[in-house]
Image (cartoon, rainbow, N blue to C red; front, side, top):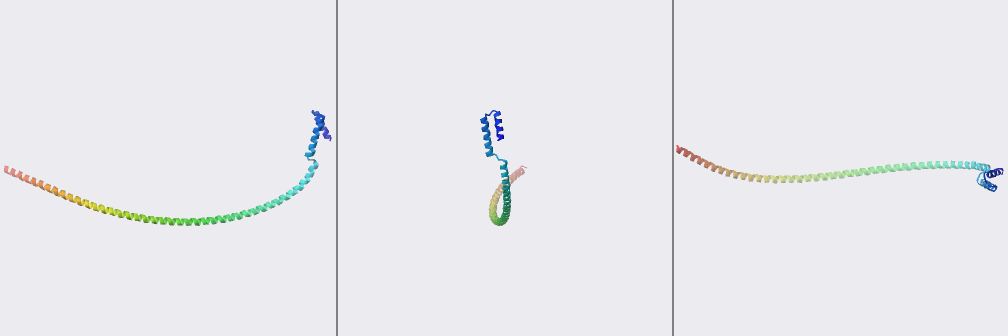
Length: 188
């Protein structure tokens, strides 16, 4: 209470009326009693806090043990899942390998069949082409023989005509020579 009187006096010195100073200090005192903790309050809570702290520590130990157990269980579960996943992946990879080998074998067989068919087709086409070429060459040979025969006939005819023409010319020249010789001989 002595402190309250001092605060009231100080407020009056700075310009508060006596009534204002008393009212302000009273408000302040009420606030302190209701909202601020005393040393006794701290001691009471301090003992409570130690007890609470022990409870919290025990709870934390229990929680730690529980978490360790859960983590161990989770680790075991994850290891099992990873092992199962590994086995599953190995099985899938083995199946995929077998499937790919089968597909490659089938593809190889298909390619061999296609190549065989293509070879047969090409051989047939080459045989047909050879036959066509032989026929064309035979026709060309026959045509050339015919043309050569016709040419030979024409040449023989032309040669006979030339021979006849030359024979006539030679006959004329021979007759003219004899005529010239006779004239020369008669002139002499």
